[in-house]
Image (cartoon, rainbow, N blue to C red; front, side):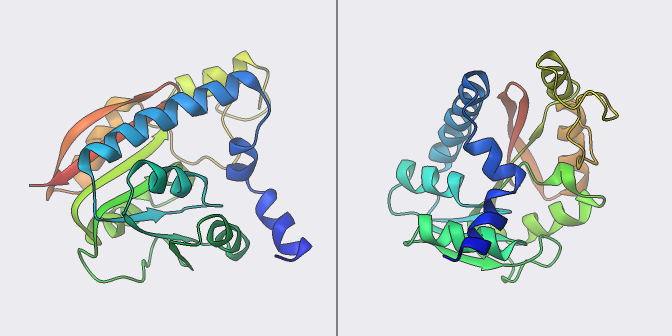
Length: 209
């Protein structure tokens, strides 16, 4: 991997989050991953799509927790995809847009999308694509507002951003209940099996009716 590609991947917020040395942040992320992986293991999918996979950190955890799963990931950032492929040589990664996922309908038993929809100006179209390529279930995480912003304020982060404490590139701010409503409204063919999370994130697991 070239130095330029490596740097482009390391500059992403996802890479910075997953490699943070802050002990509080690391504990929160570890708890989040434990909850997320537990729900994925309950579904025990044969095929999994990691939508917006970033540098492949969560993909690595999924493949370890669900041995034998055939994992595919995509991200819009080619540098992140290169790093993800290097980290997970037994998976397949492609560069693609969440608004035009390059796979046929119902291609994957479980489709996951973690910390992506809050960055979109049109999250409904993105979620519609995720549902389209799922044959069984979708699992999605987003910040749990207003607690995500409050947690940042408590540690003095993003105090000049509005809403105060928000990440500067977040465009959607869902409470847990509102996110559940968003999923059921956007995906009428799915029902919510579990709506919970790990502070300060919401996780929603839904399956085809």
